[in-house]
Length: 182
Length: 337
Image (cartoon, rainbow over all chains, first blue to last red; front, side, top):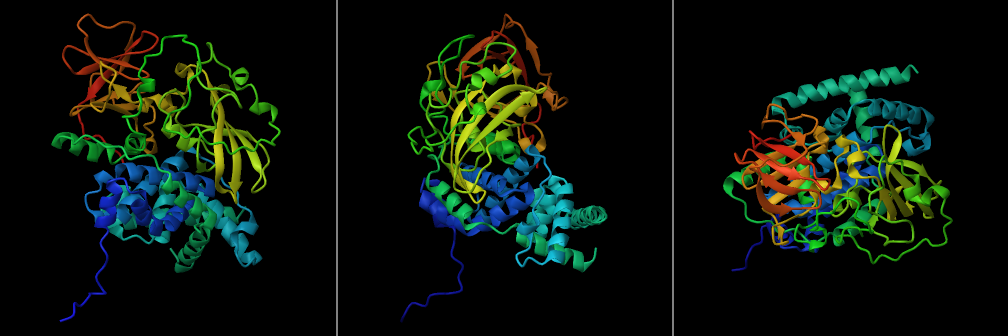
């Protein structure tokens, strides 16, 4: 009888995590690689610049590498790594309080003026939010994380995530309207 | 909240979060050169729980585990005497062999004579070097010294609060200078000079090429210090993990604190009183050790560790002969999110 491989079985992360724990950088690289793009994107949204985002993800990589022994469930690596990214991005965002003015040319891939202006207004409004609101909206609307993981990142009960998102959106909308009137 | 606005937000977030391939490539390259993993002693149950809850929930976690191994060579084991001279090389965990050099650059005036630019109250600290007098340290990264600072173990520099001021106009792919400064009341207390190239605003080849600083007591106390995380040594000069320190989690605004773990106990250097009410006694500074202080033999770059007779406080002898009294936390599960 031929062995039947279950092609639907999800590959486990445990061997890679074990190898990384033993100091295998390649294994660690394979663990983080699928998440780097989203990590940099989220960090860029929270910190405001690509350079700061790269710094944040570098810090997250270092902290994940050094702290991987603390990861109890290997399958939880993606959310655990995101937590390192969130912490680093938030720390850098708070350390470097500044308003980032973005060029219109940087914003709209299609160059349409209306959309570019709309997006610049939104960019300015977003920068008015504090780092926690920026993080919350990033977790919810960019990463699209489930409520439970968002709650874990923020250290709040699951039940309060939705209301916090609602209030953060209200603050963003108010900031957007204020920017629009400028 | 209208769906239109949420759609606009999500579109904008997708645009804003677009990631440059060069940035990803540089970060992937960063993984290949990560420092050796630190092997930690098996913690006791209580200590493990405390680490998970208190350290694991805060940037102190990053501060602790992101630091290079406490088993590094004992180059920092000496207790510097006041006024000791000489130049201290950067941490051995950094790569001093980097030779890539934008040697064709014309250095701006502010990139020269860093020590002359400082506005110290006392003599500048005997650390650092000028451009061309020391190694270029760093790896692929951005024009920010933050990663380097987290790796520095053997000199005292502010851990945060750095500003870029000034920087040369740069063009993608061309060499560039940035001067990072730490000031207190507008007076310049520490300088880090970086040189290198950036790629589309992202990581490129960036190196610290010079740094100088005033005595650490002149730094902003809320900025944290690199020496908060300096490795500890026992009485025989052997690196130890029995005592560990790290800067308080920055994302909770606790950079001004230092957390010291000794056995199952957590002690706090808390000059601003952030944890008042959560410690047995308060942080304070004295001019001499009490008669009944018990020497432990543990020491690092910044402190010699004594204990009070009642074991509830640490008595930390500083290089200037002062004594810092660190209270024990009444709650070893302090943490932040």
